[in-house]
Amino acid sequence: MKSISDTSERAEMIRRPVFTVLGPLSQFPERTVRTFTLDEMSVGIVCANGEVFGFINRCPHQGGPVCEGELSGSIESRRAGEYNYDPQALVLRCPWHGWEFRLTDGTCTIPRHNVKIPRLKVQATRLDVLRREAESSGATLAFAHDCGNLPEGIMVVALRQHLPSHA
Amino acid sequence: MNNHDYIIDCDIHPTFGKHDYARLAQRYLPKAWQAYAIEYGQNVVSHSIGSHFPRIHPNSARFDAWPPNGDVPGSDYDFMKLQHFDRWKTKYCIINPLTLLVHPRNYGFANAVAHALNEWVIETWLAKDDHLRSSISIAYEDPTASVREIERYSGDPRFVSICFVTRTFEPLGNSKYWPIYEICESKGLPFGIHFGGYSGWPLTGAGFPSYYIEDHCGMAQSMQAHVISMVMEGVFERFPKLQVVLLEGGMMWLPSLMWRLDRCWRAMRSEVPHLKEPPSFYIRRNVWLTTQPIEEPKKLSSWKTFVEQLNMPGRIMYASDYPHWDFDSPEKIEEIFTVVGRDFARDILGANAERLYRFEAGKPLRTGTEAVVQS
Image 1 (spheres, rainbow over the protein chains, first blue to last red):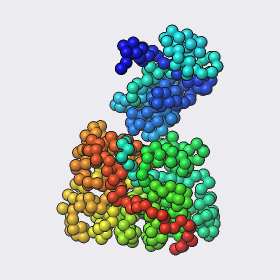
Image 2: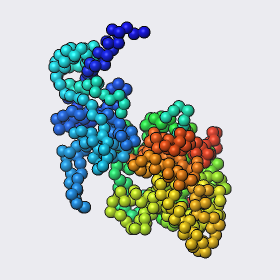
Image 3: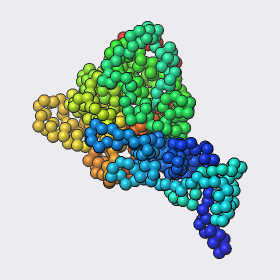
Image 4: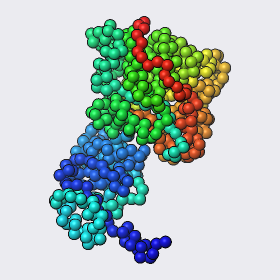
């Protein structure tokens, strides 16, 4: 039997954000996708256009590892025979069947397909800032564990509180 | 997937690694054919110049199927085991070598290549893994020699079928191919028709398309053309026990094709008086379907309607097409057919194939190479 205080402590633990430090920003060059396992869930971290994006690594189509596919620009056309390549309109292409998802919001580019890959909250932040945030939010223990002996500087961080319970 | 379920995958495509071509030639092709290939080339007629894979993905493969050793998808046993066999815990996988998608016009050379392929499959794949099975490769445009090649391997329990492609020189009902059907029937070997090939013909009667997407969707029409041909020419009257497996042609077109054929047969029976039964009878008795690439109707309930219209109980089998880009995962197939019923889905993933193919355990009858009999 759990005491009331145990229960409220557990609730507090769940409420607190848990940081996972994925590594120094230098390990995430522009236009790269790397996959990690967080809470037994595969996630993809994308660095592009100076931003960091995170997605659940599971395609809504057949469950393929969408973040292990290509990160590329998009082909658009206004009329038959015309091909326009926009290198800035980045999409993740699932390695299985080529379904494309916009980097900006994870939505699928296929017309009339209202599906998306869930976005995960990810940020690039300085380690000292992160330490302060971690302490003030009470997530110090988990944070310290994840942090290990990483050097100071800008780190890529995932907030595990934001992982969906299932993908 | 539950643990008590099992998966039999009716269509996987191991292929040559970068160095296998040279090794294959040196090991299994007689010197004369090695010299022929170097001096004259393969003498193939193909509708496309350059790559045989003008595909959405390089090598027509899943982007994640490139092995870490840098070789081509489907060439590395260890990686395939990790990514496919172990991932889905497959009980059996059937290899359909696609090298003879391009059939050399020189039949002697084609036969030598077919034989080399069979030896390559044994050495590179079957000998490594007891759960692998294969189709026998034959130079199908030379049925006499094909029969000899089938005779040679049909005693090896690891070879469980024969495989053709849809771009043959003639529609597959043509009596030219009947010696192959005769031996398939007598040996109890299912006869597979796999989408693809480069015979020089367009895939459909509409001519050569502009886009790969047209070619890929044409799989259904090309498969239909062969089914119509085999039924109408009386293949299944002559070989009533022959079992034909359609590989990589989709499925949902078959009910409407049966309706169309039966209607035409009622009106024009005098042209094909050898057909004693309606065309749908032969299809339901002699044809098996594989799931890939699965159609994707908006409502899953459409599958219930399809299964009812198809009315071919126990004749749908799972195929992945690994490592190709239009791969279907067992999870998706299970999700789709659970709409019809839990047992129905389970049978598609494993039990139906187990009823058709001879998967009996046992040591192979032979493992060494044999001299190529040149025609």
